[in-house]
Length: 205
Length: 312
Image 1 (cartoon, rainbow over the protein chains, first blue to last red):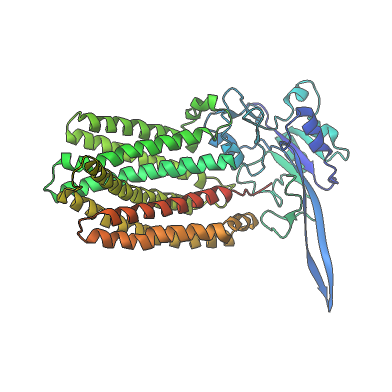
Image 2 (cartoon, chains in turn blue, cyan):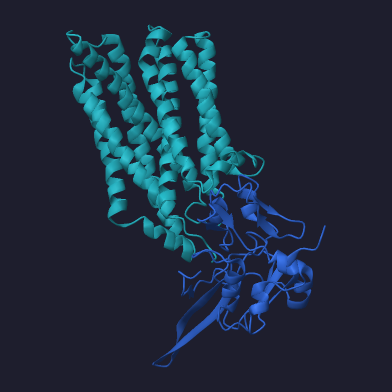
């Protein structure tokens, strides 16, 4: 079995500039509304009460998300055509010759990775920039990040180097799909299901 | 929105078809067990409704094609039977349609013994139940969608199947009676319905009325339980419940209540009386079906609208 690949995201470094999102869109020339990588602004807050004084205690952090090429890739399981499949290196891709465009994989994915392309009538998704990697380059999103918050590589090495956090709000519990993702959480990041915050740019993600 | 429409039409018509086929089977079994009537006589009452099931099923399957982005690849949806409930749904759907067609053909041509045809009908009904079950599994297994990932999905699908199936059969029986009477009128004869046929039909309609009232009760227990479950869930579950509010949701509840409840009572009362003119019963049975159909259609539309996923 070849090594399984994944993404690393250092949330403490991300300033929400969305260069990764735009680099991905530019590289893959995706249609309007199709964004394989998206950046969510997650924010919230409470009141800190000291005596009779209420002072706001607020937070905001950014979360960039593409496909996590999950170990339990639910999109692969539910796909009726076997178009959605996992390669030896764990990368989940769509076979255009098989895909019927039923969008069941879209419903199943809590990371919004498979996205419907109305122009081709098929599903489309992140392939971890297979062509760039074969040419010895980094995926477009990783290369574009000005604060070096993104990295990719064999998931075992990423976990060894950065730990094994894969679930912070608003992401689902990692047990749902076992994503090949490592996050270094921002100090204000909330645990999964805490839900005191909310995504403030829902139409962008 | 268009894709929601095709899924709504497909799922409602497919479930109504399965429900009607099962209810026709129950009518057949009960009518035979009461004795006194030959299988030909009972077939004469149920056959038109059986053929109508074929029409509604084909309509539903045709609508499902419009959901696909690349219909040319449609045959590929049977490739993942070992893991995908969507593959299984289509396999059951085609099986139900195929067996149903063979059964209808043997009924029409009177091929094989009645026992053989009954066995075929039983097998078809079983595959139909498999179709509804696999449809429910498609949604209820999705952990990413809290509104669907619940015991409520299979229960609601079962209620819709039986409720629409029952009322459709009631409307079809009365439609057949009225159509035959009209043919007599057009031939200058006095319109009559064989007293024993009418008795079988009114007995069936009484059963259908009772079933629809009970199913209405079940539906009106499940809906608040579902809302309760969503309100106890995470932020996504709470957000997905927003669909089930406002005028459209109220309209759905009102239509199903009027159709299955109030008119169910009227259907029972009219069917329990013997009278020369079956027209009032025909009108009430048809309107009851129409109201519930529209109500269930809205309900399924909102089911698809409640698709809000966890995560981002």
